[in-house]
Image (cartoon, rainbow, N blue to C red; front, side, top):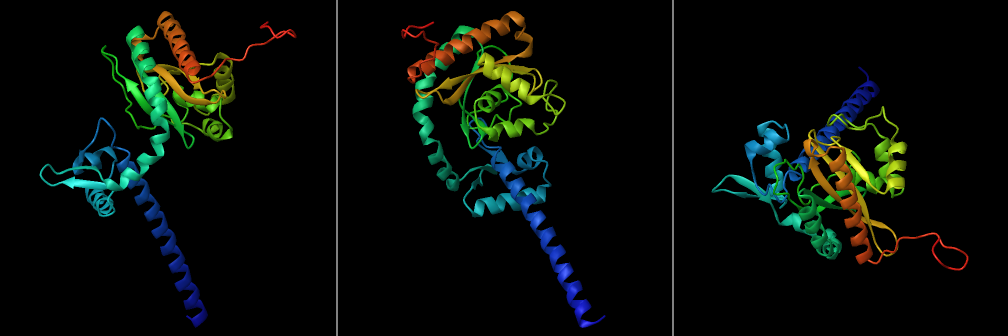
Length: 283
């Protein structure tokens, strides 16, 4: 083989090695981020075996990743219990949520009142970088599984919160709705559905439903919360087991969520626009 051919072969192998290394690095990053996403208000610590199982990662790979995250301060290990929790490097992310503290505090009494009225769980979400994130919740004392926790991402649009944000936001979240969804649960909207029809219904009715679209056996109804400029700044939702979400219950829950979202919006300074006659009086 000539020098030129050898050079080309070496270059080709180097390119292939680089691509393989790059792909492996990206996969490792994705796995590491998946691990960090396991931690929330209800799951503050995990063992290595639990992390490996929940992320479908080989135990040795999980060990190497947790070791890397520990070295960078994203995880800490309690050696007495062998369990991992979030480290100080994660604290910087908390500053990004400070702008929502006042909004969450203002909404709390409304959420509690809604849960007391309906006997169901209430969730409150805000939009962060095109994703609906649970900012607060009030649990129902009644039986029912709640697949959500404060700080957990709840949208794309296979849920009521995400649909509301998508319906009233620019193209970012609408594009995500158009993209094919995996069949997460019996009612998940997939490529076989027309997403724009669903968004148009949400805009028209000012309410969105999740009929077992995100989690089997769980339904929800959500409504937008607006600030004084009319922008949708949050969503409030009732989360109800499918067995308690028949037609009459759905009607009551829808009315209750609308009233709560409207009352909270009014508190934030929003005044619903009504048509007016030439004399300035409401039509």
